[in-house]
Structures are given as C-alpha cells and as structure tokens.
Length: 133
Image (cartoon, rainbow, N blue to C red; front, side, top):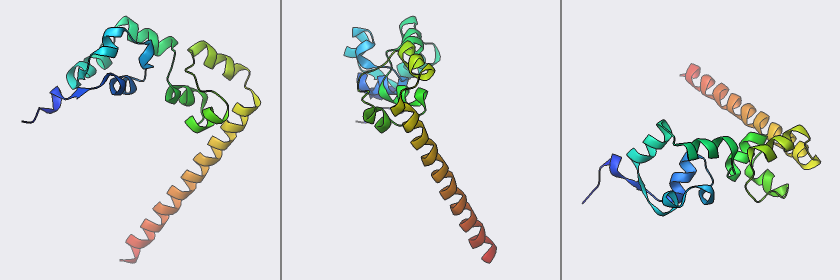
C-alpha cells in the first residue's frame, strides 16, 4: 500500500530541519507528532507565533547560525561553537567578531571564489565543446 505524496509523514527532527528551527526549542506537541507534508507546508505558509518567534529570536540550529555568520558548519566547529545560538548572540559575534570568525569568513570567501572559478572553467569547456561540433 502506498501513500500519496501529500500524506507523507515527516519525523519531528526532519520537519524541524525543513523549517530551520532547533527541535528542542519547539513545543512538546511538535516534538512528539510526525507531520504530513500538507501540515508542514501549512506551517511554512502560515507560521504560528511560536514558529515565527523561534525563527526571529532562536535558539537557531547550526546551519542557520553558520549561514547568518557567513561561514560553514565546520567553521563553527573549528571556532568551538557547538551549541545553538540566539539571534542576539549571533549579532554580538557579528558586531565584534573574534579572530576565529574573521579567519573562517576568509576561508569561506576563498572557497566561494574557487567554486566560482571552477564553474566558469566548466562553462568555458562546455562552450568550446559545443562550438567544436
């Protein structure tokens, strides 16, 4: 027996990842109840107050923290940040960045530049291949 796409159920941990929130900070009912795809879409479209507050103030999971700081998740770990951070804590790090954050932002910028260079080289090679035909 197969279920329809809309009735697919997500474990609370996967739903929290998709919503970009830290699971232990969500209401207990959310943590205990699998959500259907339709319910998840409804939460994304019309977030309840608790979800809007978590997204606004945190605590935020590592992917969100890393994104807001402009570094990788591995960079967070290298910097010793293993716990979720609130928006206020993230803003404090942005305003007065410690040495590790400055370094990790430089690393992230170098990685992005290398990825762009490789993408441009790939496009150039494809263009040459097409024009040679």
